[in-house]
Length: 433
Image 1: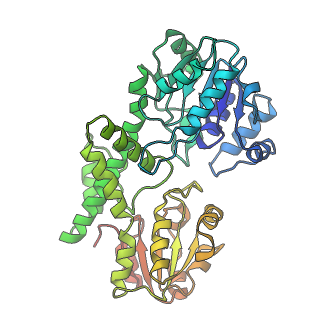
Image 2 (image 1 turned 135 degrees about the vertical axis):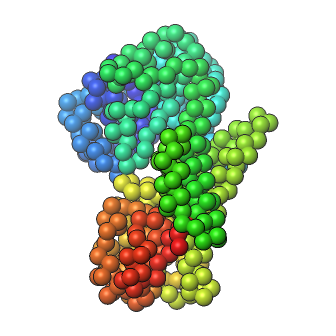
Image 3 (image 1 turned 30 degrees about the vertical axis):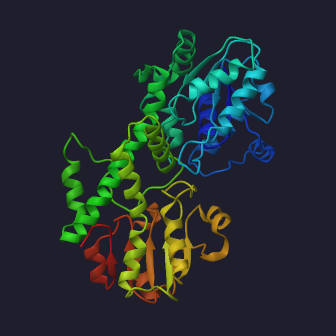
C-alpha cells in the first residue's frame, strides 16, 4: 500500500519506518528542510532504540522516503496519516494549529479517494474538524478516521511492530476496509484490532494515558503517607501488585511523570471535560498530585541540609523523563534543577543521552559531566532522578571515596537503604524508612 505520513516527530517517524518494514511504500513529510535533509543522511533526530536501523534498512530498500513537499506526497496515497504535534495551549487545551494546516493542504492536494487518519493525540471531535476542512478544499471523495498510537518511548519500535492493540475509529465502511488491510500483517497470529466509532477512539487514547498516570500519582501519594506514618512503600507496592485485579505495572513511586504524553494529555482531557460540563475530579487530582511530587526531592534536600542548599554542590544523575530516551519535555529533573539553582546550589548533571537537549533548554546554568562518577566528585549530595540501567548498581565505595558528603537521594527507589547505610551513606528514598 502507498502511505503518506505527515510529521516526522516521534510518532510519525516510528510509524513511517514501521509500516515500511511490512512492505508498504511510505513517504514521510515534514515542513523542516533541515530535518528532512538529516533524515536523508540517515540521521535520527531523537534517541529511540532500534529506530535508526529500521529507518536505514527501509530507505535502502526504497520503501521509505522523505520530502518537504506534501502536495507531491498526497496523490496516489491510499492512507494519509496526520502525526503532527498537538502541544498544550496556555489554557491546557490541545493546540490543533498544525492539524488544521495539514488538513487544508491535504484537501488541496487530493486527486482521488484516500483515508485521512489522525494518529496524533487529539481531542474528541477533531476528526469532524479535519473532515470539514478537507471538504472545503476538495471535490474528491475521502474518509476520515482515528488511529491513536500507544507507543512507549524507549520501546516504541517493538510497540509498533508488535502492538498490544490497534484502535480503529471509523464511521465509513471504506475506511474500515482500507485500515484493516493495512494492519493485517501486524495481527496474523492474534487479531488485536478493535474497531469503534471515531469519537470513542479519540477518547480511548486519553483514557489510557489518564489511567496509567492515575496509578503513578496514586502510588506517589501513598509514598508520602508511608513516610509520614513510618511505613515502607516498597512492601506495600509488592503486596497490592500481587492482586491480579490490580497488577504490578505502573505502581512504582518516584518523582513524578513527565514526557510528551501524560502531562499534556491530562491537561487536554481536563479541558475537554470542562467544556463538556462533566468535570473529571480524579484526573484533576492526578495532575495536581504530579505537580506536587516533582517538588519532593528538592524538599528532602533542603530538609537534610537544615533548610538551605546555598553554595552546596549537588550531583544529578538522569535528565530525561525516563530511561532509553533523550526526551526532556516536562522532565522532573529539570524542575528539580531549576529549584536548586534558584536556591543557590551548584549543580552538576550526567545523563547517558539527554545532556545536549538539556543544555539547549537550560543552557549553562549548571555544569555537565561526561562521566557519572566524575559528576559526583566533590558533591555534597547525589540525586538519582532517572533510573537508567547504569545507575542501578554503581560502585558505591568509589562514590563514598570521592563525594564531599556521603548523602544519597534515590528518586526511583532502586537502591537498598540497608546496604547504603551500612556503607556510611545517608539515604533518602520515596516513601521509605
